[in-house]
Image 1 (cartoon, rainbow, N blue to C red):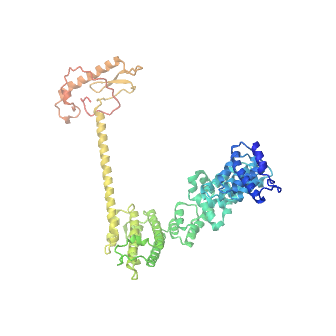
Image 2 (image 1 turned 180 degrees about the vertical axis):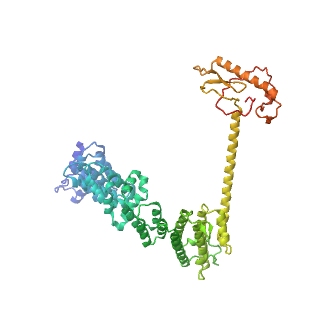
Image 3 (image 1 turned 45 degrees about the vertical axis):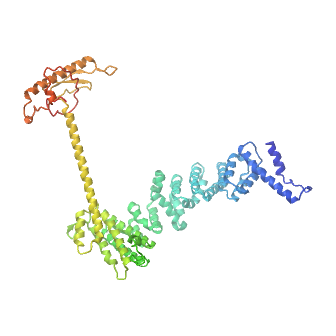
Length: 609
């Protein structure tokens, strides 16, 4: 420390080069003096980080100036030094000015956070605290790392969660548009935890910023369910505080910024005014959403008609795009390879976008048919899926609608490919809602005189699918029968091991042995006494063994008298094996103790096991 003080007093002195010095020019000596200062300021921070030396504030300020302006300056070196130095070793405002001048945002962020901590609990410094907090948000937003930028939400949540922080919350409310542009979901999460009761004021403040884009992004984060993936509690609280007017504002902004998502929103939500929503969708000419709202109001036929008319219009638009897109001729003499029709459809970006719109409209039409499949069953005084067949007829007839003399062969082929895709999409949805018989009957009856080439591949595919489903169902039935048979065999195996018992005593302990007589009577003969080594007493074993032997002898005597009876004789049916017949009636072999459980009636009389 003493050496550092001496060096700093000599090297950092302004009068290092005196006017009376005669060795060398004054310019050379000034350059050497600057070089010495830089060398000293370069090695001095190393010892400051270690904490082995201290320095006055003016010298620490010179160190930061050198670190910020030297070649290869690193913000990591500045941050490590700031973390090592005590707060009393530098002037906060001077170091901040040095760092912000060279845009060292993370070092400036550290100092602004220190400034907030120092002034947040002190009286009369609220403006200074607000300044440091506001500049801290600036430092986060100016950082080049996207993940680091999002740390502003955790910092704002931490600083605004305590008491006496209303001034900081006002700063956050003023910076909300910038936070929404950074990440709308995290902004909504922040609002849900701190400003949930001020949601109406917040939405009013966001209204009109960037033509409503900021308000829409904020509302979309709440209503779309994205916030629920981060914090379900905050999402529920914010959703509960949204009114019908807020939902209408969201719908209005959606028709402006994301019209393709209006149908999905209307079909999954009910927090809007039906008449106002229909009027808005009709004004913006959002067909699928308008048709859905007409359906909700009971006009299913009008909704289907509107959708099919729009589908025809979109198909004509696609035809015009294909005609003017300059598609390559599929039968060009210069090319020896045929061009795939599907690749021709997607050759033009406009055609691809239009095709996507057509599929979206058709998907909405099929949704309508599926929702109302049980409400429109009359077809020419017959029962049948009317709505589905309306769509099918319109797609089949669209080929003649789109045919024209001016169309080239490649355009006709491309249109035919588009129609095949739409028909396949329709019939795949019809499979689960219309019986195969009705579908085949419809096609062969109404379109018998036309070329069924469009249907051939789809019908073959459907028949193969049905065949596969039948195979799966048949295999499932076989497995079920196998399981039933296996269960029956297992049940029979258990029942033939039992003894014929007419009636058991009502109160039997789990450790009792039963003596079954020849007539099926059952008596409790003894109880199992278990020693500590879990072995049954020899007395009970001997008694039970004798009872079992007596019962077996009685059964064998009966078997010799009735062994030649017909098996259909009923009660005295004999299922004894050949080895059992060979045993004599005086056989004294002890077969052990049998404990009779709660089985149903045995299926035989006279069998052993």
